[in-house]
Length: 107
Image (cartoon, rainbow, N blue to C red; front, side, top):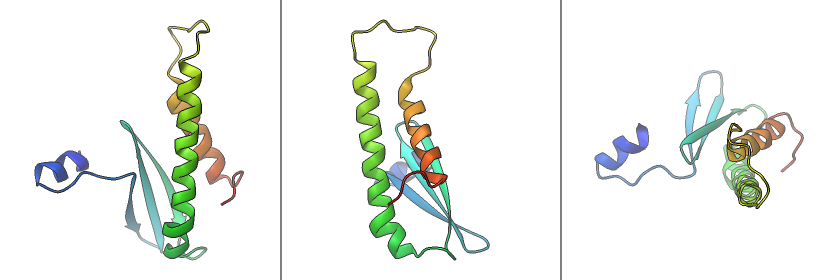
């Protein structure tokens, strides 16, 4: 809805992510992944916005793109497809973000 509103007001649409300032020195980073959105809550008492914007986000976006590429390749394979299974793209991205937020991936 936000993207549609911006485009309707003759602004460019949303990019890969946007930031929302929260109370208690927290920052919400919201990623737009196709039709889906994923978020990470960042404690600004433990990191700086400079590190977040210049190091963490580019690295995370690169890894999300790699996860998407791997998932797309897997869904295009000639193996039998289960018609009742959900698309793996969302699952792969969700798994990555879950591991990232638990500290299993480092930047």
